[in-house]
Length: 321
Image 1 (cartoon, rainbow, N blue to C red):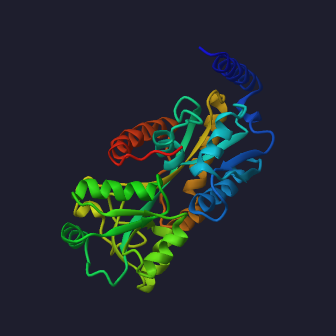
Image 2: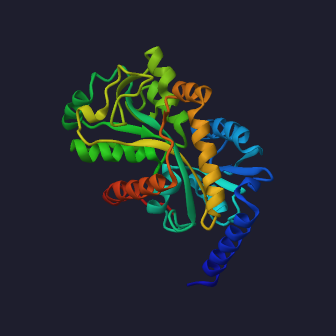
Image 3: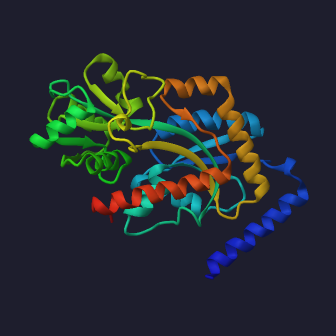
C-alpha cells in the first residue's frame, strides 16, 4: 500500500470517528463545493445548478457550484479525487468522467472506483440520432439500409465523447460503416448538419430538441431503452436494434474516505431534491429522467457502464493522450 493511500485511509477513518463523535446532525456546518467538470451552460451545468440549489435547502448550508472544465471532465474529476475526504467537496459526475475517460485516456488522472465514494445517481439524459431532412430516410431501419448501399458520415461533439461512442455502438450493432466526423462541441456539429455538410448526428436530446420541433432536424430514434417522455413520438433505437442503449447521466460522488455520515446526509438531500415537484418539472423540461439511487446502486451502475463501454472503446480503437 502506497503512503498516499495509507494517509487517505487514516485521514478518512479519523474524520469518520470525529464526525460520529460530534453527531451526524453537525454535518454540514459550512458550505459545500459542488465541482461541475464542464463549462457553464451545458447540460451537466444546468442539472448541477438545479440540484445544488435544492440540496442547499435540505442541508441548511449553501452548495456552491464551481465549474472546472477541461480534458473531457477529467480536470474536475481529478480535483475532487484529490480533495480532502470531509464531505465538503463533491463532484457532479457523468458517463465521461466515470466510464469513458478512464477507458480512453492513456494517462489516468484518477481511478473512477477506488478514488471516489458514490452518493447518488441523479438523472439519465437521452441522446438522439437525427438527420438532415434532405437525407431520404424516415426511420432507423431505412438509415441502416441506406448505409449499406452508400457511404455516409455522422457528426458528434468530439472524439471519445459519449455521442461519438453512441455512434460507434450503433455502427457495431447495425453492421454498418458510417464515417465519424468529430467537432469541438455540439454547437458546430449541429451547424454543419443543419447545413447538410454532414447528414447525420448523434446529439444530446435537450440540445437538439428545438431543431427537431421546428423540423430542421428529423429525429430517427432516441438512445435510451424506452422512448423519452418529452418526445413520445420518437422511437427508441432499441425498437429496431434490441439491446441498444446509451445515454448521458449525472451522479454525485465524494472523495474516497468521506465519512459515512456525510455520505448519508448528502444522499438524503439528493433524494429529497430529486423528489421535489419543482425539480421534477424542470428535469422533464430538460428531457432528463430522474433515477435517484442509493450509493450502492450508483457503484453498481459505474461497474456496468465500464463493462458496457470497454469493448466499444476497444473495437473502435479510441484513445486520447
